[in-house]
Length: 234
Image (cartoon, rainbow, N blue to C red; front, side):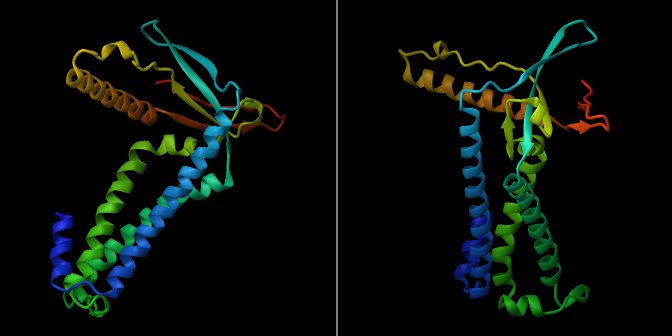
């Protein structure tokens, strides 16, 4: 595993000060982005909780004549939110570039790779420790970006209660979640706990599926001032 290989590398004295600095800087950047995202979400939540009603109903008629109800929510782009959003994509690109570059350097002197990489990190073990951590973290970041990019785009925008002020409209199907507390058996703690865990897991799965199906559409302003969006219900 990554942790086991890292422990072995450090036990052999392979990791040096350069490797430690790379690890500390890398995870410091991730922590800073996480804190920035949390602070932005807190501000966004406060905007949602000011008593204003967000969202407008949008109904489509499916081919089987069953109505499907959607909700359209207005959002405005935020400079800080956009910086935070694309910083996650940037750190993924930087980490991927680091992984590819030092994979090549680790084969020195094969494949025309210079020896500077191994010299900087002292030896192969010293290069491996930060490489493994960055390799693991960028794959986690990449998976989250791929699965939740539409939700992240709207999550780093500020909601507006007036669609006339929106720069983007987020359209998602209105799906109710099962939150019936009576499903928990009060006479059997373990059974009730298992049911709660299963219900929470099912809700998380549905929210993830809902986030994947979320559509972010920009508001188009015509020459005559007409504001419109284009959306195709599939």
